[in-house]
Image (cartoon, rainbow, N blue to C red; front, side, top):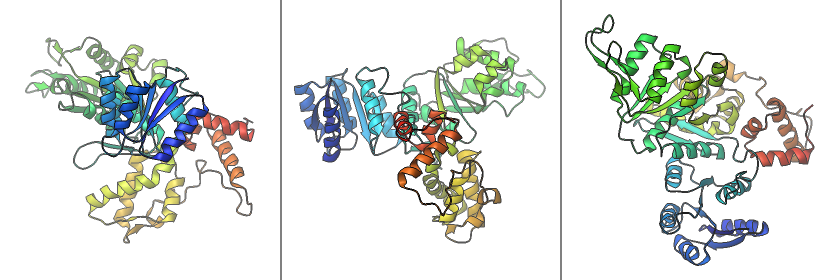
Length: 456
């Protein structure tokens, strides 16, 4: 068993965690502030530290820095009720081994502590694979903001923080409209090369010849209309970040040229024999099944593995419906600014419609729907009649099963029925079920055993 130091100015949280880990057999010491925590670290020599990030006086980030100086090998887990990307980046880049949001899911904290203490299993299969309550948007000042209110998005934050500390190539997978480019921008902005350019190339928007010129540049006379030399984005970005969107659409020839740029850091402008070198960081994104394209012989396997050094997945909105109210509030702020409106929110009936719809276009589609509704709405609240017919009238398979209104069930029975419905909806894919339900894999397994659920 280990000695654990728990630091939080909230006495209830300190006491709850202390009792929990004492019950598991650990030796626990507690501190209400960073000063007392450092005294315990010097005197009690804990094996791991769990610390809040926001405390009176010295906060958890400063405490983390002091621990890194005095005990660089001591694992620190940061916990916080503030679910912002900057805090996650500060904690992870400052040396925290994990970052757990409040309210604390004890299964997630157990898994984080197990990893910190060297348990490779992390305390249970699929720990941390939870549902999402996430907003991804880009404000008008050009900076990138990603707001996550769930353990699942906190995991994306951790990945952004970790990959931003290296120059490793990143592949971002997710459906259209889930914010892949914003994740790429966040990685760039958190990196040591954030002052260098970030440039994006849409691999599906240009024919092959123009795409090659856009990426690698061309010399004068390289093709009809090339009246002067043109620098490609790979040269202009320098040691910044080149974001390749819709990477699955690259032709075989362009795949080979990109592979050379990744492997040898070399490329040749169109029409030239001069070999140039690049120090750019590559981030690619796709909404296609890239592994499937490799299996079908449509995408080079060697390029696929070169791109997939680090993989980040952006989940679809239908797998995180609980985020829709928060998304509406934030997106309406932007819409009010752009349209010079004063929409205060949406009615309850409207929210019911938005929560039921499966959103194939994800966050981008939600924003477009809200913008169109704001244009036609005359009142301060968006009414359901301002929504498109297909959203207002949706009653498809993605709507959770509703019991007959004449039947009355206990809360426990409703919970059992809903969990069973989600499991059947996902064909008993527990990872997907966890995303929809917003619970951890160990917690889902406990419910399955408690309710005696099994596939038909």
